Length: 269
Length: 284
Image (cartoon, rainbow over all chains, first blue to last red; front, top):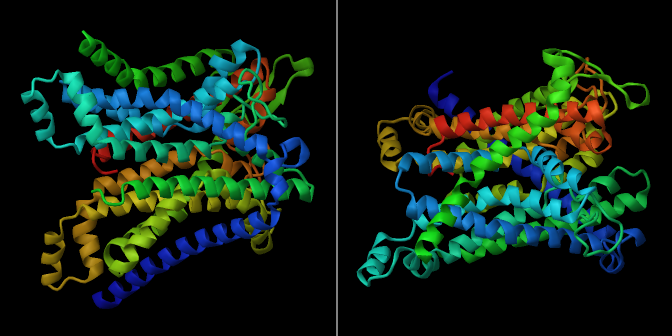
């Protein structure tokens, strides 16, 4: 085969793989939209799981994810600040960055087992706090990564201007550097929120699930994703329809938050 | 004063990843002691998961879930690697520039869809097709592997594309000026230049496939049996944990912790390899 033919063959295969990839993904999305819309009714949003709706599940999932964000954002942003602004040893910083990336890729089910051992077993049962902690553990490394990268984009001259004005190091970081990186870090937080709100495995044996509306984090807590897993495996059509409705709404939430994050940074970089 | 406190708090936060990773290892190791002492290395060879009478003792071994995890990951990688490379080549060298952005964004959004959605879609729409084409009862190694591949393709393609995009245009233009075809440019210029990033992305996707729970949980069949053909149902470490961890007690629970420890250590090694050796900072 001559090289021009080989070239055409490879280009054809590459284009075909893009078509196959996009095709599968469109298939998944159209199924989700059709099944989701036909299974979603107004009562889906006004009833709790016990009455065939997902109101308590949406509230529960958001509550746990928001609490996780409250825990993870200060820790992640501070860690990012250390790596980019304070660390004197490039070797230590590189090691800490790599460890954070390794933690980001740790299997989510293992994080669930870890949190079970520390926050469920000793406290006498499943609870919403444990679910939030598991999600926060997944979120911290993502926020460390984006803070670190965004601080790196802040021009050195801004810091020098702060020093020239006689500002102390932490004042410069808080009032100049962080402000300059604000949009990027916010986007990172939104994207990591979108990631953890769709997590199931870390919640299975931490918060477990609850059919009823509750804001009491010390007991089993309602979860949208855990409910999807349970409902989809029930044999009756009503449960499966509710699972499709819940999946559709979850995907819409995740994609909206994602697009929102991208919209924020549309003019940057 | 305030500055010093601020600095120290930021230092403690930065070391948090280290302590959490260490904590995971220590906790899992501690709770797995019982199973380690009872079964030793035989744990890797025992193909039973039988609780004893009255929840006393019992025989638990990791062979089947370990094999299930490795086999589904293998199937997924065999499918996902060539397709992801193809998509990355398409996006960097072939696609018209008006197409690059929308297709690129679509791929990234699809990487953001929660894995449970892939699992549920696979159960209701993909498993029946596999059943119709290959026989069996629809769920099993093959179905789980294919859906796992669909799930990791966007992730792998996006990182590979970013790595390929770091190739300086001047290098590619020089090759084109010498009369090289697009394939020759990809093979001899882009691939060698982006090698580290590409291998890193494959290893990261491998780590993700090994630890994936929800997409596989719907599709692998959750049967504690060694598969004799590719369409047979079996189980994997994450799936066994997801379905049985909350009801397990004593020795069975300890065996579950041991499985979690194995999964954690293997993915730790794989991801460290990708991070420390292949992916420099900046390729993201």
